Image (cartoon, rainbow, N blue to C red; front, side):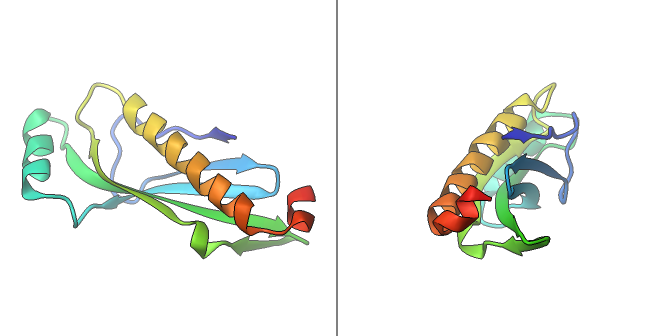
Amino acid sequence: MKLERFYTYAMIGDSVVGFAGAYTVMVTLKHDYEASPEDHMRCAEATEHYGFVALLEAEVSVAINEHSIRIPDARTKQHAIGVNVGVTSNHLDAQAAVLAHRALEKARSMVGPTTRAA
């Protein structure tokens, strides 16, 4: 699966999408309300480019007979991701790709053999 890339400076609500056969995986950046205050301060002090701590969330849907059906149980999250703390977003792209593959494998294990053949 080839996943899109985040821009150099990501913001809350940004998302990237990847496709694997009948599956679509979307990884979204959300504010991590569960991160510690120390994590938030570390990211804010580490950069002049508005660094913050985010939650990455991957959601999977599958196309069946021209309908896109979400698989809520395949949703996967990763907390305490530092965003905009480096020169590029390569670390963010790598973490999003790992999370997307994890969610995709979870979804594939949940669907029946007929859907896998599509």
